[in-house]
Length: 99
Image 1 (cartoon, rainbow, N blue to C red):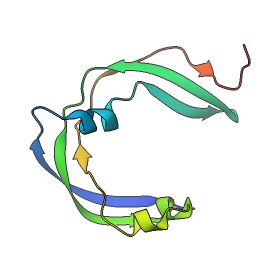
Image 2 (cartoon, rainbow, N blue to C red):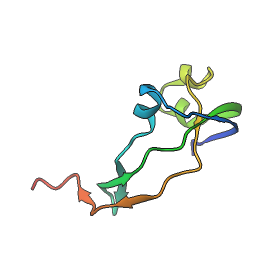
Image 3 (spheres, one colour):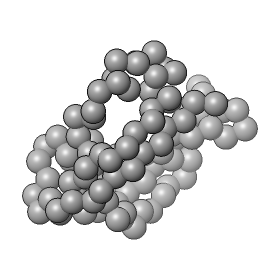
Image 4 (spheres, helix red, strand yellow):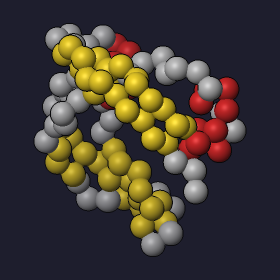
């Protein structure tokens, strides 16, 4: 089964994340399977407290298995870390429901 394993060193905190960092981390929905059906669960949270990261080790069979082997063979464009945020979740929506 394909998997990704990585080791990261956490660096300095980004006091003012730029547009790219916000775009990469400001996600307000969770996509997940439920009994074989796709669900979307809305969520809300404040800004992530972001830190720069340094990639120390990477075994990326997951990306390679999706057909993007050239991406798995090179360092990532960005490494960000966060201790997390408190998140509230809404009611799930079935994505395959035509209503």
